Image 1 (cartoon, one colour):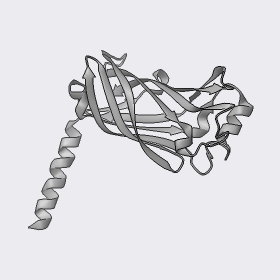
Image 2 (cartoon, helix red, strand yellow; image 1 turned 135 degrees about the horizontal axis):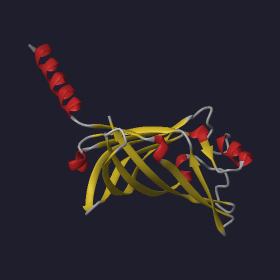
Image 3 (cartoon, helix red, strand yellow; image 1 turned 90 degrees about the vertical axis):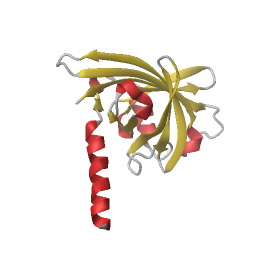
Image 4 (cartoon, one colour; image 1 turned 120 degrees about the vertical axis):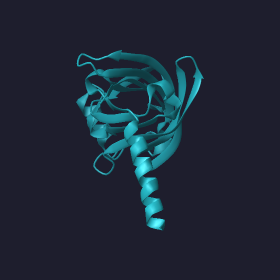
Length: 189
């Protein structure tokens, strides 16, 4: 009897997940960007070129959706190869030991209109911390193939030292705060 109940619960949970819409990130129309203060006088911009992610849920009820994202850290690109190689090293991201950073949502809170707070767990290197992204929902359109496409802008600022990215720990040359901006399109499929 216990097995039948467990099977029934698993079946119902599986069917409810299948009934929810699934959206996959469109890498051709998405960018994962950051900027960090340099020498206290200006900023260095960068991005990650390889990533994947998705949303499971109904865009008419965004607060119930689940969001996940994975970034290939070796794809870091600041347009300066020597700097990018240094960022991949043990001084910063240690990409051979920690090849990816991940985000998984824990909740989504509507603020007003098209503005949301996306709460979740961000893992960089061997550290996972709670973070909150400010998100603006840009709406949905029909893609060229007829599928639904949804767009978002997500922003956050993290302290790199919190994630053991501790080169220049005083922040004299490289700022401690990392400003993150994601321009995101997800395709229903």
